Image (cartoon, rainbow, N blue to C red; front, side):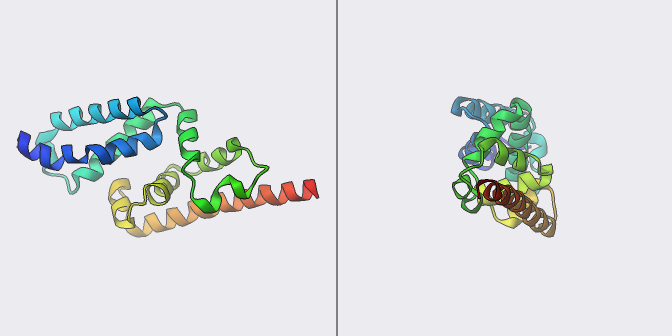
Length: 168
């Protein structure tokens, strides 16, 4: 059984990281803060089982992700995602493109690809950690990441080419 001291040193220390993670999904900082409080409460209630986990951090991150998805409508997630796009697919390169369009592309990705792209390109987690959090093999993480990036890039390029032809 995990006591208060152990809980403090293994779970509570993740608070800031979980808050940053929640804050990526949720528009308002207070919401992210509340969500992390909620996760901490749930983890405390489940402290008996935590010792059996390979990674408490990965488990906590998954909880944050799931609860954030439950809490928000799609629009909230989109708005947050947009400001976090990797530089090579930011809309500055595509001036005629609307935010909605880019969001549709990212949101159109399968869940695994969207999650992997987020964790790698935005949170900058290592592949090995993403594998743990997403419950995937490392190779599956690489494949999903590659597909996600390509998919977004190809779609952006198509639209950009179309716009160029239309303007030209």
